[in-house]
Image 1: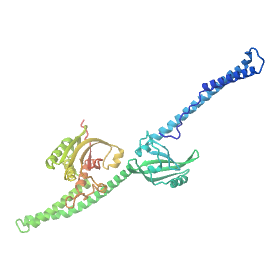
Image 2: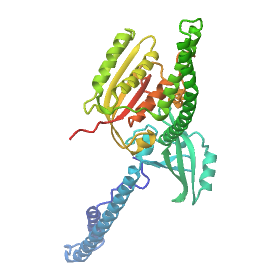
Image 3: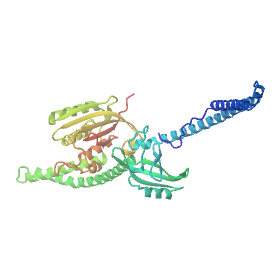
Image 4: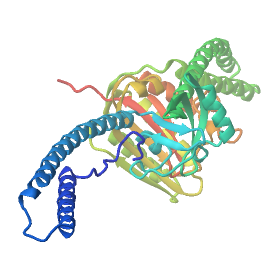
Length: 445
């Protein structure tokens, strides 16, 4: 991990080695001086006493040098350990942050970064590459970056940009940038936060608000239209009774049938707006899905393979079995329509714990344990535009005349009246997956 403040420990010269070299040099100097002196003096036996004073001086100064160097080395060790500890704390603080912290110089070179930064770009944080800002953000030219750093010296600015990952993908990021001067250089300290989750939450909240508004509107319209249709249905029944067997019977029956179809659509709208009431009893989900799978195997083309996937754990919810059966069957039929030629239909159930973040993203849910019933197909999937309006009344991806666009909105109304919701996800391998979340039934004491 590249770290500007981490110090590589140098290899200081050993105090003992320095002292020994000093002593060797001193003795050699004395010996040479003695023999040079002998060569210029009268011959005779050498006087050992004359060597004692210089040798004593060398020994004393060697010892003093050794003691001094040992003390200096200890001070260096203490200082070095303190610097390493401070650098380690600094690195730990950087790496515990979930935000991508990075430092740029005026040329756009990456000087420092934490693990979250490398991970966000798809790099291995244990083997960080040498990067420049253009590797992940093409908006900055060197001149613009130098101007940005100079303009931000001593102050901060928050802006949004797009970061590019190593694999070519991209994501929106919020940058909090501060210009600083360090060791004579102007640097830009940046804290980047991935906005993907925030954008998804905002879109989910907008969809929830839109669906709530549509529900209120649909409820009011359905109630008024139902009042208008009731006299028509009643009048058609009276006309049929008065003119039974007459020439106008086909016309009367046509009026009555059209009014009944309109009333059926209004009931679906009211279901979306208000949900449905019904007896709430423990419903075992696995047998329910097994029965629907058998229906699919018998009624679908042989080119569509049906699979079941049951995870261990609780599989009981509190609800109306008939209503839940209709919801799941409607989703299964939609999956079949997405695979007219061939494909794989997977029905399954697994436990799911909904936390605070998901509660904000999934309106209608509460924090706690849920059962996630999923219906997955291998069809072409849904476009982003279709996903935005998926549960709105009268929205459909089918051809004109092949659907009313009330199936999913009605299913959502039923599931919400059971304390749950329906979620759509796009699997990585393609296709579409609908997840019906229902609260786990409370166990009887």
